[in-house]
Length: 257
Image (cartoon, rainbow, N blue to C red; front, side):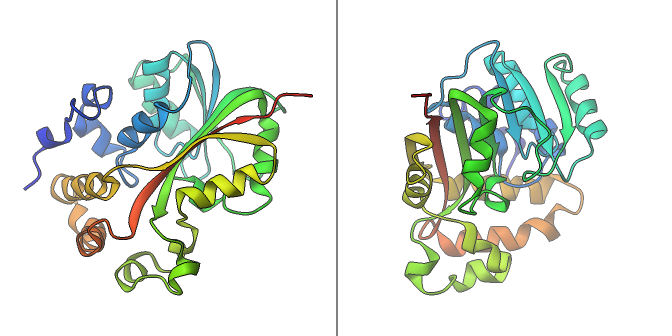
């Protein structure tokens, strides 16, 4: 059994360990977003006062973390979660004055160009960011020199190289795994545009173990959690880190001239 105390891991995630696991479970929409964001942020330079777009912010845990831990002003944009629902989370967490909730589709962002110092996306970019045209669209919203950071499900080898989606993965996520690319795929995809300089592209160490630990906790501590999480648990257990991981990718927008 996975006790909630097992989710407090200050040796690996000291910032995330200050957050109540039960609170985070209540906002669950997938793998532990704070673990992913804390690791990703090591490759970013986030400073107080920056304006940050949290793209695909879900129920708002990552936006709370950004505001609290880095003192940034956050715009939390998501298409699936109502802005009022997210705003209530921010108010309860005491960051309502620093986080603005916006319901927005990733291909029709209602923001002015060059209005953000950074764009961060945790466990969402795979749904909209793999198209060749998406980075050129998104980078317009970054100021010159602005930062982009993405944590997204990844494969250790490209599905195209394998020739098929491995059966244990296909059984659970189907064709969605086509969008789970390697870190080097993301590096090339971004650098070829010459619109950004990639500053880091790596697979998160033992990402599948983190994902498995969190999925087991969700199965055991959330109402009806077993039904939705057991297939993921079975997938990760069968995989054992052979194919499944998370890619953490960061870049800076090119400066003018």
